[in-house]
Image (tube, rainbow, N blue to C red; front, side):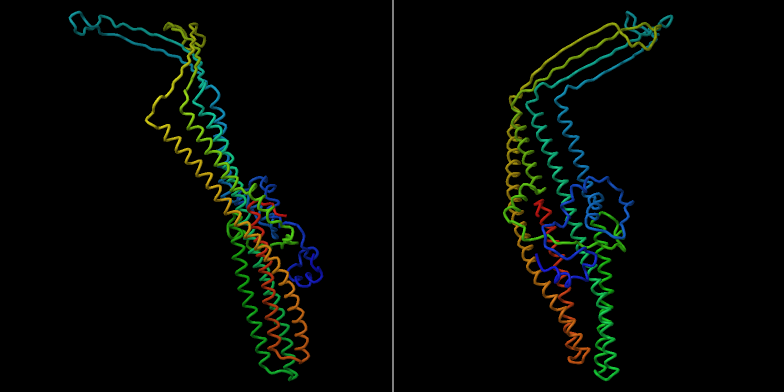
Length: 474
């Protein structure tokens, strides 16, 4: 644990809303730790979301997970995949059909065919009518379908896992994008606070220069230099304010909201930073390999390809079907009621059939080779992804370690520059140094503060990049 008193002094201007000093604990940023609990919130309509005056990271992530078009699209695909798997289960059940029919026919005959083969007209038209009713219930069951239904069930189950992992991957991506946008906007907000505070500092320096000029302790050039510094500080405030507004728009879009939704929102800073010393390289890599959504997605695709290969090979087996039908019907006279729902004549039938394709022009062979090729491609794609993710994870671990060490040095550098500036101001006020020395001290503090802010949020972004892999880093 680092010296809390020194850190609090060095960072007091941008940690005013954080309780206590900065301690390097094993606390995570909270971005990935709360993702899955947040994902269970009820969906909100984008147009109904109003950002609070003060926004924290967890709330930003929760809104992003509910409003992101990518997450909603992936969730819809997961619903469709679930329906396909239910249909695969249903293929093992018999199909049932029920029919009910009522029929009436009337005809009038006015002509007949004579013995000579000519058409003659009857002396009186002959009229007749008939009615009938029929009902039927049929059950058809595919007893054995060359094993395809089992292959389809396995494949659809694997596809469900694929789209679920796609949904997890979309969520992880949205969390990363929202976290990065939040940190970038928070960085801009802190830089704006820095430039606003620098305006007050430059006004104080101008007041000192004017008072010393009034007693002829300095030349007017010092007053002009102080005025120039004040004007530059005010220009920096305008620039920082515009950059902050731009970053807030980017944050709103990353959350799935209109760009102006983030206007005027104050972002709450992160408290304690995660501890890089708690990271164990191989342990993190192993966790990533078992939890990364993209790896899990490709593993599910590989399982689906294996099921497809099994289904292609099963086409060499026979197909067996069975059917049972019950029916009843009756003819009725033309004077009886049309609506007859209890006919007396009944019938039953049962059939079972088997078919076996002996030769289909090498179609089965082609399907088997194609399925085998897809399975091998899935295996190699998974191997490639594992290598790339391990490379990226190790890179982020190195970046976190480097930023952690650099951040400690930057904190000390800022504390020294701030203490030196306070001493230089006192010396200038006492007339022991000139204004140029004071300007140099001011410039050093400004550079140190900006570097400290950049390093702090680069450090948080590096952790967010690591957490997107599902490594569950401490």
